[in-house]
Length: 273
Image (cartoon, rainbow, N blue to C red; front, top):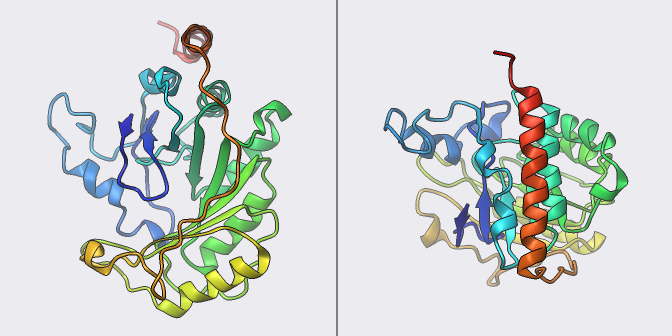
């Protein structure tokens, strides 16, 4: 876990998968790839393999050890619905999220079709308000179809991360969408975002009564550019009740149960000697 995240809309990150591969224009300047490749070849570093996709099963039960309630960004350094991650492994991630119900889990993907298909196979007791499912939206061609797929997914809370916003998205149907984050691209080579594109999304969120969160203008110097839109910050979140953390004994019981199940599933997936 990385606690005290600098990402404005979350508190911590949890990465039971590392690495990914590019699938659309929003991936062009991927911050996770840039960070990971910095450490390629460094023995013992978590990103010794750079941005190559790999599972990190020892991280699967990690949130069950955190006593304090947090908003947790799931796989900030990967995409859980990458084709290289099996349904069985994804299910283990969901089982941890279900058990650790005093946290708010924020799971974001660009592979929205698989998200929709996977959630259709989940029992209804996995559809809970502390498990937020979201899709990245960067443009009309790739981003808008993801919104439709998300709308068809079974989820307690659905959200959009419109970052990096690369063009005017036009009219948006936000039916069944519970939250919208908007941000510009940052870092070297950042593609510019126009204020009117953001204003259009803000206006549509207001009209459709969807909480709007403006993350950043981005650019090469994102701290200088700041995150105010027309003189104010927008830090709106969905109104979701959080559960109190369970007593230590109950937390340990849940953790032991989940770890035992993880070990059994991983053993069944391991190739025969």
